[in-house]
Amino acid sequence: MGVISNILDGKSVSCHDILPKGMLFGASEGMRGLLQIVEQVASASVPIVILGEKGTGKETLARFIHSCSPGIETPFLKLSPQFQGARAIDEVAFRLEEPSVEARDGSARDGGLEGPPCTLFVEEVSEVSQERQLELLHLIRGSKPLISMDSADIPVELRVIGASTQDLEQQVAAGRLREDLYSLLSVVRLRLSPLRERKEDIPQLAYYFWQVYSERFGCQSPAPSLQLVRRLQEHSWPGNIRELENVMKRYVVLGAEGIEGIGSSSQFQRPAAPAPPARRSASLKQVTREATQALERKIILRTLQETQWNRRQTARALNISYRALLYKIKEAGLLPEQSADGVELSGASSQKPDRRVA
Image (cartoon, rainbow, N blue to C red):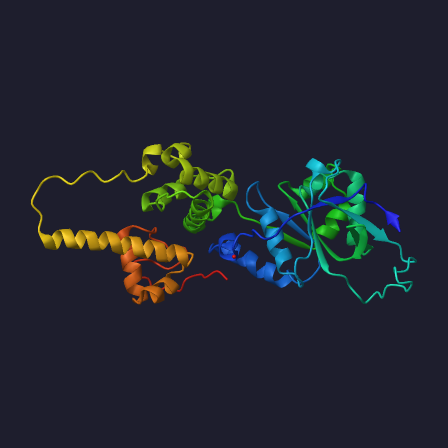
């Protein structure tokens, strides 16, 4: 057995916090086409290369593909140029099994038997050293890999997923990426669209991140207003989804102060505390109606959060019609005009939503 643990090590990465499928792929035409390709290749062990700008979710997509593999708690390993020369406690060492080597029980491994699926995610593949590129080439070409975990060598069925923000053909021409490695990795090429090209997905992503971090940070932040979401859609998002996630984190914690770089901060002010009611005469009917509307809005918002903004489940839980719920959501200003599931809140559109399959 040729030991290469000091050459190719990957950090074991948890795959529990995977962005929901609907958030990852959204409703834009390009991302829906990407989802169709991913569903075709996810269960196979073919090499994949994921291309996209920084912050578009390349590692998140790799984790999603890995989560579609058969088996439970299968290893997802990450190789990054940033730590390729260092060793850490959570590293998992790869070893290559020579064809003549017999298994531990004394019998040769049956070539037809495969170990559990394992994914090796290679971040910025063109920046990996030439030595490690050669080892990746051996792994992809069919060498039987084992991983060393807890002093035991475990045979695995390995899938290699490379990622890059660069034009890899230019990297090959410049000699930074092996041409043979690029040819093998690019059996399947997936390209993630930048967020500026999928602005119809911004509302549901913003609401998702607001909900996640409101709960995680224990903040009673108000739901993003329609005006806020519209301003988010006007931003160019050079940092893509990662930038939007950070913006929503700051909004949850700091309100307008946390998102001053996105348009005018005055557009994002949290609702001010209601001023004490002026001393004026008001009919009991009017006071009752306003109190009822406020309570109704609170109940609808809470139920939407409990159902993860699934409007049909919310309508059933509240025992009202779906159309009535859409009207109340729009009236209360809880969601933008285009809802997260692609349905017009006005209920006037007869066009079928481009539904996602998170």
